[in-house]
Image 1 (tube, helix red, strand yellow):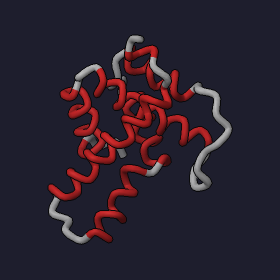
Image 2: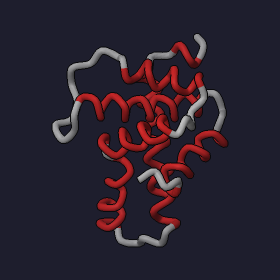
Image 3: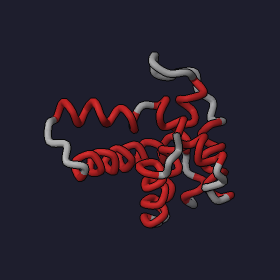
Length: 127
């Protein structure tokens, strides 16, 4: 099975761990040494609401390739009725799209592209 054909939730499962690892490394490299502070800061990146925000801003900037948009849309359109209580179903689906994309890129061995995406999220003036 080609990577692009894999279940988007499987891609998101992988992408979630990769994304969170990038965030943790970023915060540690910023010099945050207290675990409680790391946890508080990480919410600015790992919550579904913030992930949704990042994806939507990058879409507005035409940052993603057509192939990447296909992955995001497949994840966003995946039929699900459950989502965390602290976010909307829309935010949850966009967040799943980002995580699916990260998982897809990882399986395709496109780490440089993951780096580019994360650099935009960390310092790309998306706000």
